[in-house]
Length: 90
Image (cartoon, rainbow, N blue to C red; front, side):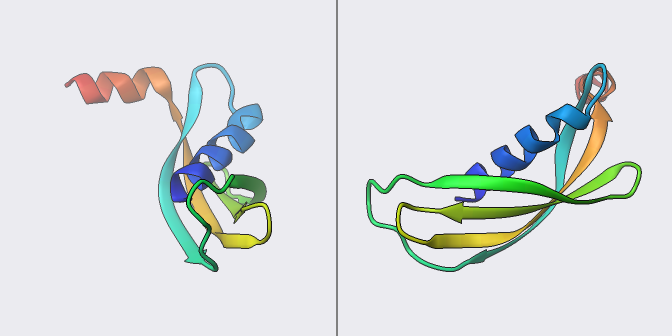
């Protein structure tokens, strides 16, 4: 569920990125609200909540076919993919 929420947040922020920018996770605060059965179809949604110049807070929810199973926030920061990869190679 959390992976789906992180992925939804990443995709929701892509339109705000320019050039080689991407967003990376900085924080996550998730409440698991209900269980889902084995094989259940789970979907996550993300909506921009706030932005302070570099850091985004995204409100996320996860649902199965019957109910909300999780909610919370994901923090993400804008980084240059090229600069990030150069730092990782050092």
